Amino acid sequence: MPTCLITGVTGQDGAYLSQFLLQKDYRVIGMMRRSASSDTVGERLRWLGILDDVELVVSDLSDLSSLIRLMQTYQPDEVYNLAAQSFVAVSWDQPLLTTQVTGMGATNVLEAVRIARPQARYYQASSSEMFGRAQQPRQSEATPFYPRSPYAVAKLYAHWMTVNYRESFGMHATNGILFNHESPLRSIEFVTRKITDGVARIKLGMARNLRLGNLSAMRDWGHARDYVRAMWLMLQQDTPDDYVVATGRTTSIRDFCRLAFTHVGLNHEDHVVSCEDLLRPAEVDALRGDASKARNKLGWQPSVSLEELIAEMVEADLARHRARM
Image 1: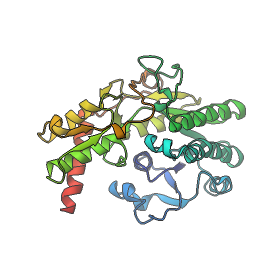
Image 2: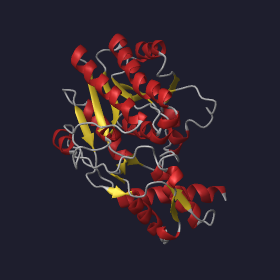
Image 3: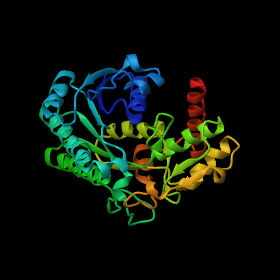
Image 4: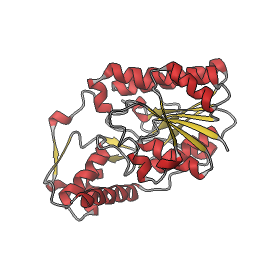
Protein backbone atom coordinates (compact mmCIF):
# COMPACT_ATOMS: atom_id res chain seq x y z
CA MET A 1 0.00 0.00 0.00
CA PRO A 2 1.64 3.29 -1.06
CA THR A 3 1.61 6.15 1.44
CA CYS A 4 0.97 9.77 0.55
CA LEU A 5 1.25 12.93 2.61
CA ILE A 6 -1.07 15.79 1.71
CA THR A 7 -0.56 19.27 3.16
CA GLY A 8 -3.69 21.39 3.16
CA VAL A 9 -5.75 18.22 3.38
CA THR A 10 -8.82 19.99 4.79
CA GLY A 11 -9.12 22.32 1.79
CA GLN A 12 -11.08 21.69 -1.40
CA ASP A 13 -8.23 20.07 -3.33
CA GLY A 14 -6.94 18.16 -0.33
CA ALA A 15 -10.35 16.62 0.26
CA TYR A 16 -10.91 15.56 -3.35
CA LEU A 17 -7.34 14.29 -3.67
CA SER A 18 -7.76 12.24 -0.48
CA GLN A 19 -10.93 10.69 -1.87
CA PHE A 20 -9.22 9.90 -5.17
CA LEU A 21 -6.15 8.32 -3.55
CA LEU A 22 -8.20 6.31 -1.04
CA GLN A 23 -10.04 4.80 -4.00
CA LYS A 24 -6.63 3.75 -5.30
CA ASP A 25 -5.81 2.06 -1.98
CA TYR A 26 -3.31 4.62 -0.70
CA ARG A 27 -2.67 5.22 2.94
CA VAL A 28 -3.51 8.93 3.20
CA ILE A 29 -1.74 11.07 5.79
CA GLY A 30 -3.36 14.48 5.94
CA MET A 31 -1.42 17.38 7.42
CA MET A 32 -3.40 20.16 9.05
CA ARG A 33 -2.35 23.12 11.15
CA ARG A 34 -3.58 23.62 14.69
CA SER A 35 -6.73 25.74 14.62
CA ALA A 36 -9.06 27.23 17.18
CA SER A 37 -11.90 25.98 14.97
CA SER A 38 -10.68 22.38 15.02
CA ASP A 39 -14.23 21.11 15.37
CA THR A 40 -15.03 22.29 11.83
CA VAL A 41 -11.76 21.81 9.91
CA GLY A 42 -12.76 18.36 8.70
CA GLU A 43 -16.06 19.45 7.16
CA ARG A 44 -14.98 18.87 3.55
CA LEU A 45 -13.65 15.41 4.34
CA ARG A 46 -16.90 14.69 6.19
CA TRP A 47 -18.93 15.96 3.20
CA LEU A 48 -17.17 13.37 1.03
CA GLY A 49 -17.63 10.65 3.65
CA ILE A 50 -13.92 10.01 4.17
CA LEU A 51 -13.10 11.81 7.41
CA ASP A 52 -12.48 8.56 9.28
CA ASP A 53 -10.30 7.17 6.47
CA VAL A 54 -7.70 9.97 6.45
CA GLU A 55 -5.03 9.97 9.16
CA LEU A 56 -4.92 13.60 10.28
CA VAL A 57 -1.69 14.92 11.78
CA VAL A 58 -0.92 18.40 13.11
CA SER A 59 2.02 20.31 11.69
CA ASP A 60 2.78 23.69 10.14
CA LEU A 61 4.50 24.81 6.94
CA SER A 62 6.51 27.34 8.95
CA ASP A 63 8.00 24.67 11.25
CA LEU A 64 10.72 22.79 9.38
CA SER A 65 11.51 20.51 12.32
CA SER A 66 7.93 19.23 12.50
CA LEU A 67 7.89 18.64 8.73
CA ILE A 68 11.11 16.61 8.95
CA ARG A 69 9.59 14.51 11.74
CA LEU A 70 6.53 13.87 9.57
CA MET A 71 8.70 12.59 6.72
CA GLN A 72 10.72 10.41 9.10
CA THR A 73 7.63 8.99 10.82
CA TYR A 74 5.43 8.22 7.82
CA GLN A 75 8.01 7.73 5.04
CA PRO A 76 5.59 8.88 2.31
CA ASP A 77 6.02 7.70 -1.27
CA GLU A 78 4.28 10.81 -2.58
CA VAL A 79 4.04 14.31 -1.07
CA TYR A 80 1.40 16.76 -2.31
CA ASN A 81 1.95 20.31 -1.10
CA LEU A 82 -1.47 21.94 -1.42
CA ALA A 83 -1.36 24.15 1.69
CA ALA A 84 -1.19 27.90 1.18
CA GLN A 85 -2.71 31.24 2.05
CA SER A 86 -4.79 30.88 -1.08
CA PHE A 87 -7.09 33.91 -1.16
CA VAL A 88 -5.81 36.38 -3.74
CA ALA A 89 -7.75 39.33 -2.28
CA VAL A 90 -6.44 38.65 1.23
CA SER A 91 -2.85 38.58 -0.01
CA TRP A 92 -2.83 42.40 -0.33
CA ASP A 93 -3.97 42.73 3.30
CA GLN A 94 -1.49 40.08 4.52
CA PRO A 95 1.42 40.09 2.06
CA LEU A 96 4.04 38.98 4.60
CA LEU A 97 1.94 36.09 5.88
CA THR A 98 1.23 35.06 2.29
CA THR A 99 4.93 35.14 1.52
CA GLN A 100 5.81 33.06 4.56
CA VAL A 101 3.09 30.42 4.13
CA THR A 102 2.66 30.18 0.37
CA GLY A 103 6.28 30.84 -0.63
CA MET A 104 8.64 29.92 2.20
CA GLY A 105 6.32 27.17 3.41
CA ALA A 106 6.79 25.29 0.15
CA THR A 107 10.56 25.55 0.54
CA ASN A 108 10.29 24.07 4.03
CA VAL A 109 8.38 21.08 2.66
CA LEU A 110 10.94 20.63 -0.13
CA GLU A 111 13.78 20.80 2.40
CA ALA A 112 12.08 18.28 4.68
CA VAL A 113 11.65 15.88 1.76
CA ARG A 114 15.27 16.37 0.68
CA ILE A 115 16.60 15.67 4.18
CA ALA A 116 14.31 12.89 5.40
CA ARG A 117 12.66 11.29 2.35
CA PRO A 118 14.61 12.20 -0.82
CA GLN A 119 13.15 9.29 -2.83
CA ALA A 120 9.59 10.58 -2.38
CA ARG A 121 7.83 12.15 -5.35
CA TYR A 122 6.84 15.75 -4.68
CA TYR A 123 3.96 17.77 -6.15
CA GLN A 124 3.82 21.56 -5.84
CA ALA A 125 0.50 23.32 -6.37
CA SER A 126 1.42 26.18 -8.69
CA SER A 127 -1.22 28.58 -9.97
CA SER A 128 -2.40 30.20 -13.19
CA GLU A 129 -2.32 33.49 -11.25
CA MET A 130 1.45 33.43 -11.87
CA PHE A 131 0.72 34.38 -15.49
CA GLY A 132 -1.07 37.52 -14.27
CA ARG A 133 -0.93 40.07 -17.08
CA ALA A 134 -0.74 37.26 -19.59
CA GLN A 135 1.87 37.66 -22.31
CA GLN A 136 0.12 35.23 -24.65
CA PRO A 137 -3.61 34.69 -25.41
CA ARG A 138 -3.34 31.06 -24.26
CA GLN A 139 -0.95 30.22 -21.45
CA SER A 140 1.23 27.12 -21.61
CA GLU A 141 4.31 25.94 -19.74
CA ALA A 142 6.41 28.19 -22.03
CA THR A 143 4.43 31.40 -21.39
CA PRO A 144 6.37 34.07 -19.42
CA PHE A 145 5.09 34.77 -15.92
CA TYR A 146 3.82 38.21 -14.85
CA PRO A 147 2.32 37.93 -11.34
CA ARG A 148 -0.11 40.65 -10.26
CA SER A 149 -0.70 39.96 -6.57
CA PRO A 150 1.33 39.03 -3.48
CA TYR A 151 -0.28 35.59 -3.70
CA ALA A 152 0.89 35.10 -7.29
CA VAL A 153 4.42 36.30 -6.45
CA ALA A 154 4.60 33.86 -3.53
CA LYS A 155 3.36 31.01 -5.74
CA LEU A 156 5.97 31.90 -8.34
CA TYR A 157 8.72 31.71 -5.71
CA ALA A 158 7.49 28.25 -4.65
CA HIS A 159 7.30 27.19 -8.30
CA TRP A 160 10.90 28.12 -9.06
CA MET A 161 12.16 26.62 -5.80
CA THR A 162 10.58 23.34 -6.89
CA VAL A 163 12.39 23.56 -10.22
CA ASN A 164 15.61 24.41 -8.38
CA TYR A 165 15.37 21.43 -6.01
CA ARG A 166 14.62 19.17 -8.96
CA GLU A 167 17.64 20.36 -10.90
CA SER A 168 20.01 20.78 -7.95
CA PHE A 169 19.29 17.61 -5.99
CA GLY A 170 17.76 15.28 -8.57
CA MET A 171 14.44 15.15 -6.72
CA HIS A 172 11.27 13.94 -8.42
CA ALA A 173 9.65 17.36 -7.95
CA THR A 174 6.83 18.50 -10.22
CA ASN A 175 4.79 21.69 -10.57
CA GLY A 176 1.14 21.56 -11.54
CA ILE A 177 0.14 24.98 -12.92
CA LEU A 178 -3.56 24.64 -12.29
CA PHE A 179 -6.06 27.09 -13.67
CA ASN A 180 -9.18 27.90 -11.66
CA HIS A 181 -10.92 24.78 -10.43
CA GLU A 182 -14.08 24.84 -8.37
CA SER A 183 -16.61 22.57 -6.66
CA PRO A 184 -19.29 22.58 -3.94
CA LEU A 185 -16.36 22.38 -1.49
CA ARG A 186 -14.90 25.72 -2.59
CA SER A 187 -14.61 28.28 0.25
CA ILE A 188 -17.16 31.07 0.31
CA GLU A 189 -14.37 33.67 -0.12
CA PHE A 190 -13.86 32.59 -3.74
CA VAL A 191 -16.00 34.39 -6.30
CA THR A 192 -17.51 31.24 -7.84
CA ARG A 193 -18.81 29.97 -4.52
CA LYS A 194 -19.88 33.49 -3.55
CA ILE A 195 -21.97 33.49 -6.73
CA THR A 196 -23.58 30.07 -6.28
CA ASP A 197 -24.26 30.72 -2.60
CA GLY A 198 -25.78 34.08 -3.52
CA VAL A 199 -27.97 32.46 -6.18
CA ALA A 200 -29.25 29.95 -3.63
CA ARG A 201 -29.98 32.65 -1.05
CA ILE A 202 -31.81 34.81 -3.57
CA LYS A 203 -33.80 31.86 -4.92
CA LEU A 204 -34.90 30.95 -1.40
CA GLY A 205 -35.89 34.52 -0.54
CA MET A 206 -33.02 35.02 1.91
CA ALA A 207 -31.42 37.87 -0.06
CA ARG A 208 -32.19 40.25 -2.90
CA ASN A 209 -28.85 41.25 -4.41
CA LEU A 210 -25.36 39.85 -4.96
CA ARG A 211 -22.45 42.28 -4.63
CA LEU A 212 -19.39 41.50 -6.77
CA GLY A 213 -16.32 43.30 -8.07
CA ASN A 214 -15.07 43.17 -11.67
CA LEU A 215 -17.67 41.33 -13.74
CA SER A 216 -15.53 41.46 -16.89
CA ALA A 217 -12.62 39.38 -15.56
CA MET A 218 -12.33 36.14 -17.50
CA ARG A 219 -11.12 32.81 -16.17
CA ASP A 220 -10.67 29.21 -17.29
CA TRP A 221 -12.81 27.19 -14.85
CA GLY A 222 -12.83 23.42 -14.35
CA HIS A 223 -13.90 20.95 -11.66
CA ALA A 224 -11.54 20.15 -8.77
CA ARG A 225 -12.27 16.42 -9.11
CA ASP A 226 -10.74 16.47 -12.60
CA TYR A 227 -7.74 18.51 -11.49
CA VAL A 228 -6.68 16.31 -8.57
CA ARG A 229 -6.61 13.39 -10.99
CA ALA A 230 -4.06 15.37 -13.01
CA MET A 231 -1.94 15.85 -9.88
CA TRP A 232 -1.73 12.11 -9.37
CA LEU A 233 -0.94 11.44 -13.03
CA MET A 234 2.01 13.85 -12.83
CA LEU A 235 3.63 11.87 -10.03
CA GLN A 236 3.21 8.59 -11.91
CA GLN A 237 5.59 9.78 -14.64
CA ASP A 238 9.16 8.48 -14.69
CA THR A 239 10.54 11.99 -15.18
CA PRO A 240 9.39 15.02 -13.16
CA ASP A 241 8.19 18.02 -15.16
CA ASP A 242 5.82 20.98 -15.09
CA TYR A 243 2.28 20.87 -16.49
CA VAL A 244 -0.52 23.32 -17.17
CA VAL A 245 -3.95 21.93 -16.25
CA ALA A 246 -6.90 23.78 -17.78
CA THR A 247 -10.04 23.37 -19.88
CA GLY A 248 -9.05 25.84 -22.61
CA ARG A 249 -12.42 27.61 -22.26
CA THR A 250 -12.63 31.15 -20.91
CA THR A 251 -15.75 32.62 -19.31
CA SER A 252 -16.35 36.02 -17.72
CA ILE A 253 -17.61 36.41 -14.18
CA ARG A 254 -20.70 38.03 -15.69
CA ASP A 255 -21.41 34.93 -17.78
CA PHE A 256 -20.73 32.66 -14.79
CA CYS A 257 -23.44 34.64 -12.99
CA ARG A 258 -25.78 34.32 -15.96
CA LEU A 259 -25.39 30.54 -16.04
CA ALA A 260 -25.84 30.21 -12.27
CA PHE A 261 -28.98 32.37 -12.11
CA THR A 262 -30.43 30.74 -15.22
CA HIS A 263 -30.11 27.35 -13.51
CA VAL A 264 -32.74 28.45 -10.97
CA GLY A 265 -34.90 30.38 -13.44
CA LEU A 266 -33.72 33.89 -12.54
CA ASN A 267 -32.18 36.76 -14.52
CA HIS A 268 -28.77 37.75 -13.18
CA GLU A 269 -29.24 41.36 -14.32
CA ASP A 270 -32.01 41.77 -11.74
CA HIS A 271 -29.74 40.84 -8.84
CA VAL A 272 -26.01 41.30 -9.54
CA VAL A 273 -24.42 44.60 -8.48
CA SER A 274 -20.82 45.56 -9.37
CA CYS A 275 -19.19 47.46 -6.50
CA GLU A 276 -16.00 49.53 -6.72
CA ASP A 277 -14.98 48.67 -3.16
CA LEU A 278 -14.62 45.01 -4.20
CA LEU A 279 -12.16 45.74 -7.04
CA ARG A 280 -8.57 44.51 -6.62
CA PRO A 281 -5.58 46.89 -6.63
CA ALA A 282 -4.18 45.07 -9.69
CA GLU A 283 -6.58 43.00 -11.75
CA VAL A 284 -5.83 39.95 -13.87
CA ASP A 285 -8.08 40.54 -16.86
CA ALA A 286 -8.13 37.17 -18.61
CA LEU A 287 -6.58 33.72 -18.29
CA ARG A 288 -6.98 30.80 -20.67
CA GLY A 289 -4.89 27.66 -20.34
CA ASP A 290 -3.30 25.47 -22.97
CA ALA A 291 -3.17 21.96 -21.49
CA SER A 292 -1.85 20.26 -24.64
CA LYS A 293 1.15 18.87 -22.78
CA ALA A 294 -1.02 17.32 -20.05
CA ARG A 295 -3.28 15.79 -22.67
CA ASN A 296 -0.41 14.38 -24.72
CA LYS A 297 1.93 13.20 -21.94
CA LEU A 298 -0.48 12.37 -19.12
CA GLY A 299 -3.53 11.36 -21.13
CA TRP A 300 -5.53 13.85 -19.05
CA GLN A 301 -8.59 15.78 -20.09
CA PRO A 302 -11.47 17.33 -18.15
CA SER A 303 -14.69 15.34 -17.82
CA VAL A 304 -17.01 17.96 -16.27
CA SER A 305 -18.33 20.91 -18.29
CA LEU A 306 -18.69 24.41 -16.86
CA GLU A 307 -22.47 24.13 -17.00
CA GLU A 308 -22.38 20.86 -15.06
CA LEU A 309 -19.99 22.36 -12.51
CA ILE A 310 -22.19 25.40 -11.91
CA ALA A 311 -25.34 23.27 -11.60
CA GLU A 312 -23.64 21.03 -9.02
CA MET A 313 -22.47 24.02 -6.98
CA VAL A 314 -25.84 25.78 -7.05
CA GLU A 315 -27.70 22.61 -6.05
CA ALA A 316 -25.27 22.01 -3.18
CA ASP A 317 -25.78 25.54 -1.86
CA LEU A 318 -29.55 25.24 -2.18
CA ALA A 319 -29.36 22.02 -0.14
CA ARG A 320 -27.18 23.68 2.51
CA HIS A 321 -29.55 26.58 3.01
CA ARG A 322 -32.70 24.46 2.92
CA ALA A 323 -31.22 22.27 5.67
CA ARG A 324 -30.88 25.37 7.89
CA MET A 325 -34.40 26.71 7.25
